[in-house]
View 1 (spheres, one colour):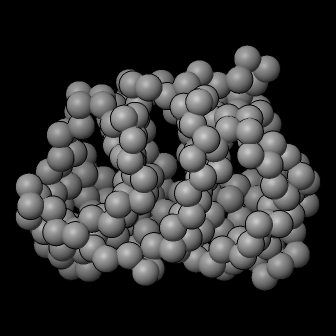
View 2 (cartoon, rainbow, N blue to C red; view 1 turned 180 degrees about the vertical axis):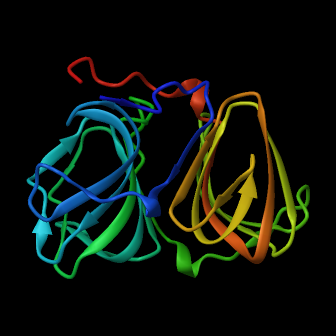
Length: 227
């Protein structure tokens, strides 16, 4: 399967307008945003766990990065409430599920194969830093290395937001919204802009809170050969 597989093209999914699709695991459904492969795939998705549902134990050969959007995500390592950002690098293993149900935003097979850094961040406890180069923008850094920059951003209401993207960028709306490219982006809307492009967005009366990932599209690993 291929969905928005060409990283050189602008990609948009207004996920809240799409139905949930069942996964192979009972009680686990997803809204696909980007995918290259079948069940073992390079993928960006929203995933919803019904109360009491879980996946079988598995190893993340290509790594897993996710943000808990609603409810409480669980595995044998702990309980992770809404707002938790987690990076499980290549070779990590767990048995994910949720007793009460949850929704997560997750990216698979998009790590540097040599990355072994596990990250757990409670984003609701983080301070916001004013971006001196971008008026109206506050940043909460989540992870950064030579290949990627992951953060939450808060955009002020009724504000123009501009950002050069020499190596591309991805944006998921968490709260509020903005307009860009003639489209309106509401919560759960996802936008990917290719390398060499420029974001020009206009926020509405509520402003916007977003998950943002930058500098990564030129260095994303290839999906598994078996996919």
